Amino acid sequence: MSLMRRGLLCLCAALLPAAPVGARSVIRMPAAELRMPFAPALAPLAAPSLAVLGLPSAPGLPSSLTLPEPFAAFAPRDVALPAVLAAPAAAPRPVNAAAPKMRERGVEREHSPRSPKLRAAARAAAGAARRARAVRAAVKPDAAGRFFDGSEAGDGLRLPEDAVIAPIEGVGRMVREIREPGKVLRERGIRATITVFGSARIKQPEQARRDFDAVVARTGKRPTTRAARAELAKARTALRMSAHYEEARRFGALVAKRGGGRVAVVTGGGPGIMEAANRGAFEAGGPSVGYNIELPHEQSANPYLTPGFSFDFKNFATRKMNLRQGARALVVFPGGFGTMDELFELVTLIQTGKHPTVPIVLMGKKAFWDRILNFGAFDALGMISPEDLDLFRFAETAEEAWRFVEDAHP
Image (cartoon, rainbow, N blue to C red; front, side):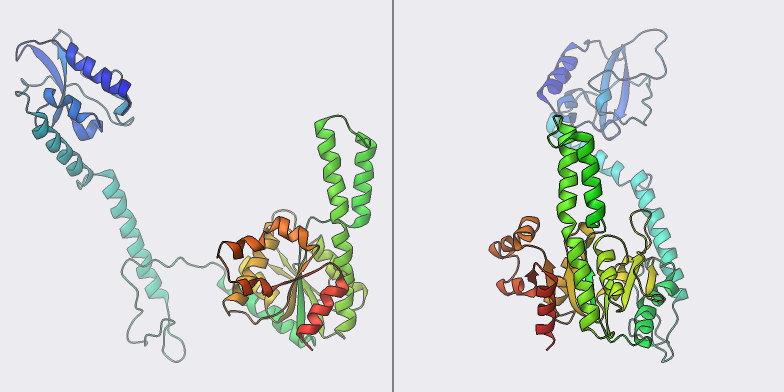
């Protein structure tokens, strides 16, 4: 409590009229009801477990009162404060005796069966128990008579009473998203994949040039306003980043030509870098695969996918599994949060032995990646081992990236 409020409390206590017992009306409220951290300051005025606010006796005293500041600031907003014409107050007790009792009453109220918190917790526990019973009733053993946790059919599912397993909607679709893409590729003669990641927002060089020229025509080459300068800088950056589109297109063509039709370029199926890699493979006559994700914005399947090799996913998890499953190399172009998420998941899986060690090639200048992701800082701070930095390579051209792939798979 602030010093100002403590001072106001002491002033209120000092100004209370010293009327004889029985000559005043009082409001009796449990300290826990008011939630007053200043209980010790009022203890000389309090009964063993009551905060007593003295009021002069007067005809027509209202049946309810609004506490003035500073008391109202500590009162719950949803608790009525009735004024009670009370019996004569008991003689004040010493501070050291009254304050502990007031704290005890606060604890008792908090843990009372009528406490809203306890009632809400009880309802939540009952709901959890009902859901757990429903899950146990729905789980069936497999053909061998065993449950997924290893228990026998006669043992029942070993779940704690408060266990809650959230139901998974669309399990059948998730299973299909895991199994069917790989099955389709194998049936069509694909023996391996190389996955390309990258931003969906990187433009084709032609489009980026048109957008830049339009901005220059609107703002001039040396704009004078801050907004115009920012718009021009953004268009210039988009034009510079479009070089990655062309490099991804060249890499897709290399995979198609060197893979002999048995190695497919796989992307997330969307625009930007994904479109560029698919376009290169498609134009070179090789298999071009897209694992598209259903999103409310930004993502739609690009037109450079081999017929029958375009898959629409609803779940990010199953899509990511397919993107890396069977991949002989993973080539990462500049991108946003999604690209970084995929990169770090791959590095983590290889680092922990959950995925075979395959080349991870980061496309672009090393200085760019050091600016975006300061890998050296991870090592300097002891967050990774020095050899973890060998899990990926840097390449600036499509040919250099392909050499890393070939060297890893002689």
